[in-house]
Amino acid sequence: MNVTVWNENRHEQKNPEVRSIYPDGIHGTIAGFLEEMGHRVQTATLDEPEHGLTDDVLRSTEVLIWWGHLAHEEVDSVIVEKVKNRVLDGMGLIVLHSGHFSKIFKSLMGTGCDLKWREADEKERLWVVEPSHPIVDGIGEYIELEKEEMYGEHFDIPAPDELVFMSWFEGGEVFRSGCTYKRGSGKVFYFRPGHETYPTYHNKDIQKVIGNAVRWAAPADREKPVYGNAQPLEKITVK
Image 1 (spheres, rainbow, N blue to C red):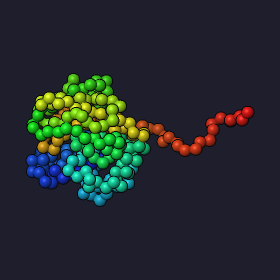
Image 2: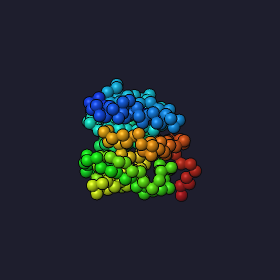
Image 3: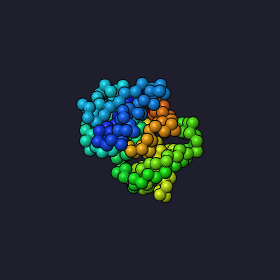
């Protein structure tokens, strides 16, 4: 699979704690374990020309992974529209953690995508609520993270096509943490965990979920649907 991992890469530059957890950037860590799974992976970051998402990069990308937080508004809306069109054409999109507030996710959802949040070093338990789904292949009944940022309901998103994970937090909140959507010919997966000051992306179960999601989100091998005015397939007899 040809995968592009996009990360705004700002926390790693500003916060020594984040840099110590992800010395190659969050994008580098994700790219590393996906390469170990056999994927062809490239990375792209906010401060590269065209945010690293040139026409050639997008054309060759089968699944795009998106992590953003501090700089959603700095992402060029022209690039966002190109990404959206590629998703509608069939490219898979995996949106991680605070990417829920990214321009691309809000555009595809058509809602505000807001939520409650709290940073208090809380335990998170991600319960598998769709055990037959390919995204949870090899995962037990739940994934437990010792410390994570809390996200809580209400999460202002459309009802998911499939709800794969539901999180419970030590402070009592719950959250729809694994949501799938179809948009045009493309598949979208939102996966909640991944706050930058915790080593979440080093967790083997989290890595397995992201790897499974890449395979699930792969474009279908079929011709693009034809739209617009159409000639009849059979002869139309006018009476």
